[in-house]
Image 1 (cartoon, rainbow, N blue to C red):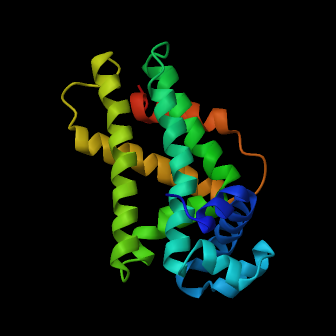
Image 2: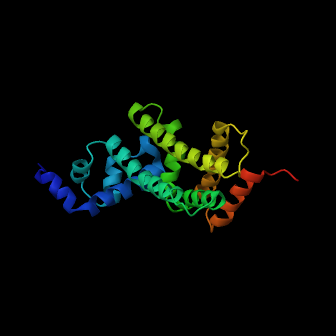
Image 3: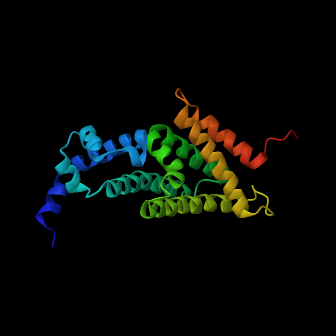
Length: 205
């Protein structure tokens, strides 16, 4: 049976969304350890009692914010990789392009994700959550690489784990550019460059 508190929470989803957006901003700017629930409540324009009603602790709020934001990214990427009309080149560029677009439009969350495993080593629950998220995205990247093998775009003698590491390095570097450098990023051109770099290399032929 659904209790009255749960019904009321469902009736005002915009309040929860506002809290999650405020958490994203404050955590992104200050990091997990330096951000306070009072600052997040103020940024969300809600009382601390309302904040704790939705999230019983800073850890729960941080965890919910991360799962909400990165869950959206993961679902979109899985929809792209499931598109049967895309061959490997188009698929690679769509996947990497969306990673960059998401990072550019959600800089705070991207910054948190890139720095999470290093900065949250002292919190086992959050560290494990981020480790699982990293593993989920690595698995998705592995699916992309296997498509490249099957379609003949990647050398069959490549070790998949090293290819995954190379792709993760490219993504991290270009996502970092989206986070750190203001201005109009040419995301499609950057996705094209990443494809050329990953498939053809940088050496002169």
